[in-house]
Amino acid sequence: MKLLVNFSRGKGRKPIIAQVVRDTGVLINVERAVIDSSEGEALIDVPDDQCKLVSDTMISLGAKVHILEHGVSLDESECVDCGACISICPREVFSFDRDWKLSLDEKRCVLCGKCVDACPSHALTLPV
Amino acid sequence: MHKTISQINERIRDGSARVVTAEEMPAIVAELGEQGALKEVDVVTTGTFGAMCSSGAFFNFGHAEPPIRMERIWLNNVEAYGGLAAVDTYIGATQQSDTREDEYGGAHVLEDLVAGKSVELRASSRGTDCYPRRTITTELLLENVNQAIMCNPRNAYQRYNAATNTTDRTLHTYMGTLLPGCGNVSYSGAGLLNPLSNDPHLRLIGSGVPIFLCGAQGMVVGEGTQHSPAGGFGTLMVTGDLKQMSQDYLRAATMTGYGVTLYVGLGIPLPVLDIDVVRATAVRDEDISVDILDYAVPSRSRPVLRKVNYAELRSGSIDLNGEEVKTSSLSSFRRARKVAAELKGWVEQGKMQLALPTRQIDPKKVSRPMHQSTRGPRVLDIMDRQVVSIREDEEIKTAAKKLLRGETNHLPVINAAGILVGIVTTFDISKAVANPGKAHLVKDIMKTKVITAKPEEAVDIAVQKLEQYNISALPVVDAEHRVLGILTAMNLGKLFGGRWLK
Image (cartoon, rainbow over all chains, first blue to last red; front, side, top):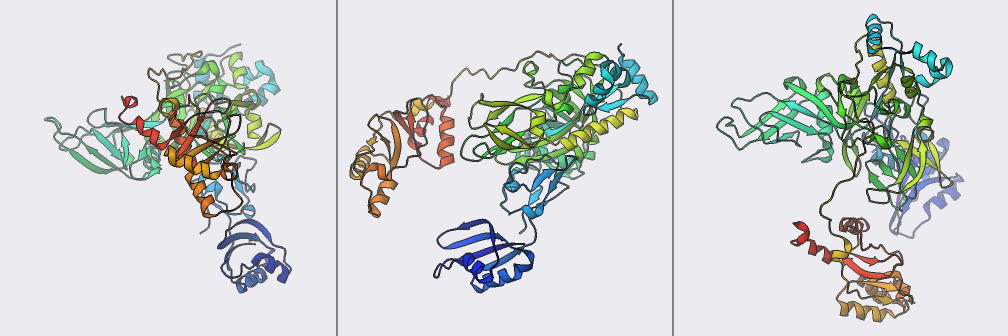
């Protein structure tokens, strides 16, 4: 399960992710993160059965947690199966099936949004 | 053995013609041999589905009451050509909307009409005795216009060079998004299904030949613009009735940072007349190679990084300087197949008969670059030759004095040999003064990654650099990286009112 975690680093600059790992013992995979002096946003991946535990602990430490149930989504009526997205994606979300139809492995998506701009047909959108 | 076009058409009429797609042909020739394939196969259908920017359509709207001689014309705020008199126009696929920029353009107007949506026609005129009306605004469906004739000046490129990017930033091109550091390779084209690749000597494809165009029965007008078959880059001008077209094979698209384009589905049925046709239509992806060009170089002639064939491109990754690089197609092989398959159905069912060209297309033509009678401004024409520079081992204070005295904001930094090694700006110096630390020398605070210009470079290229890197000056250097001058935003003022605007 993927979680989008937002935290402000205002008071005491708490090492939130490290603390959650230590307190819960859950190994967190950080897929991408943007952290500056005042705030941070991290996309993390945790096992489904420990999602609630991680999420609750994060919230208790002052972070905002948003569960991401979906990756990038494909509007099949707009897609022409060109494959412009395939080489743009850093996580190999896209591939062609045997019939050269574009297929999408949503679970791999880390919502970086690179494919959205690269799609000539405006067929890809990120969940809001 | 050879067959005539009338024998083949007779078989099409009585439903006995053997029709295969160009994708099936190589295996058939491998199995039956060339003579066997000639005997067996009557028609090979080809297909391609890709971005074809040079496309558009003619419209005749019929006369309004009172009548108007339309001089400026817009369809859904996309300007169409107003030089065809009265109620005719041509809308080009890449023309962008006046209000929605690259979100909407001529291609979208065409797709909306084909999809059954209404489009607003707006036109103005100066008014004449015979055409008194000055303006008109009306909503139109495709069925409301007398004619909507797609006529695409340059379609069906025989093949297209692949693209990559050696710079350290992402490029947005008509070849799609090119990641930095050769992060990907993009390509376009249907390879073995491509019409012209199956008739490279243009024996069968020429004026009047029936084709599949976006789901309609169209025809080849003749050679396309920029037709250059001698180098393997033949093109076709094609036409067809927009009213018969389908959204499955006509799609508007936007290449981010480049603009609007139209995806066109195009297929040509080829009569298998003789052994030469068998050989040509047995072409495989492996047999069709293109260059991988480096789009880092903003020039007409881009450097070739390597040659590659369509089988390699389609495999998903290729080797580039020892690294595996992912490939992306911009055209759709799946839809190209659909075009060839649908066309195959048409011929099998007798819906389309074949014809030989009424006029051949020149198979040896070479397209030349533009003849330029005047040269645009170059960096050396407008750069400042009086450039104040500083040595890297001088003190920051000296740099500050030089900046003040030179009335400039940029100091190129050179080493003992006179080679450019960095740049300092008033900002760098203010920062060093405001936060005094260990830095004493120019080399402690200078930026070492300097964006430079070459004296012979076109000013447009230099301006592009200023914009891209959000900077206001470019040191101009020679081949040895010695500073010859500096180009600042101030120098660009020389372009206005000067001789370059004549």
